[in-house]
Length: 114
Length: 115
Image (cartoon, rainbow over all chains, first blue to last red; front, side, top):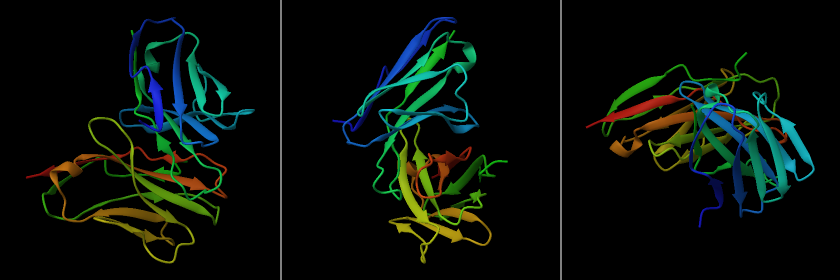
């Protein structure tokens, strides 16, 4: 089973709709992240959380919100989706105890906003 | 200012040849880590190699090695003996400080391996 899972894997929605992307991990990591990837722009950080009570904005948080329901779960919400939020969204995790450790990525959610 | 710069949007390499993907970074923190990831067409992010700012030797992992030039703030990825399966997007990323910061990514380089 995958260590970091994302649901849904693909989603098509309409402008103005509320949508939630979910991320779960079994790695036991305390740190979780949400990135979006756009062609030619690389991965950009939306939000991150270092533990259940900690939420931090990233580079491009406008239009998004997050919820850290448990150590293993980190959800990303688009309250009112717009077409320029069409992108590939990645959840990632990392371990506090080893800052040399990489971030482990989920498989990604491809979101299309019409 | 961009913290990670990858100046090659696309690269071509002949199968079995070596290729270097460029990455320069910008930080004033003496402690940092540099990461390279591969993203094949299927979309997943695959960690390849890590270099710490205090590491004395260049990192190597199989066919991947990192040409780390600290004074020039560059961390170029070298892939030896390219294979068709190496065709993918490659991202350079950096974590600054003591680890309490997320990774910051470059815009990536698309590598195409030609038979």
